[in-house]
Image 1 (cartoon, helix red, strand yellow):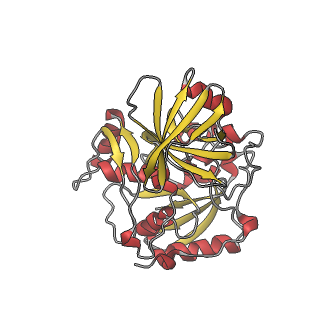
Image 2: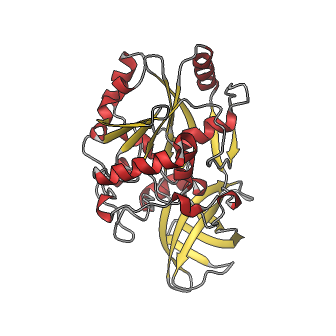
Length: 348
């Protein structure tokens, strides 16, 4: 399967740079896989677009300020993007996989000063990333809150090292409660407390999984042959309560609707061939592309994704590539807002 089959053109002016002031006023494109129909609604119409008894499964991960700027001990700036925490060897050390960017070549052994209380030492190359030791005076999460930057995607334009007012709050979902993500599960951006209350009042349940979004979700696919791509692993957890809620709904023939591709990957990683969801935690590198047979999902809420991305391939696996690309073309013609802060799609 060729990656070029998942390309499309999106005008730059349709790439949303900020969320709407009212998140649930995003537009909602509703796709019916059986009838191959497309409808245009608002996200606030979601309760009427679902059925009583449906179970929404959302990702409750919380984004950390994972982008850091520092200087080499020898001079020259370095941008560090924390990807995933690893087990440390010594007390007070924090071992991370990182992406590093610098004008000059990075070498193992390079020392980086972020601020007086946070220093880093580059250890070795780790595939597309680097293994870096962070040494801090104090609690790392407090230091990151003070000197880290919200890790917005590159298509959301900001001055280097700067955050816009509200970025930290805007780049979190209303469900966010478990620190660990370095990118947001953006399908959850459209929910508000009021909408959640309305969903509950109409008999629609909400359950949660955790996937700490990392490089696996947003890494570019560099192989032209789709099947050759390998995903980086990301940490996940499924609680016994979520497994029970999903399995009870499945036994009663009620629908399971994933909120986002990250929730989808957790559900598909932990659901067996009988359709039963297991509780537990671990890491998943599941790569879903057309031809995959879904075990867990009856529906999917998702945003409009970057061309040639693993996210677009997952959506195309769930709803058929030609149908999805036709819908994307209609979204462009109808001037939908694209990507992280953009509009949404419900596929049933």
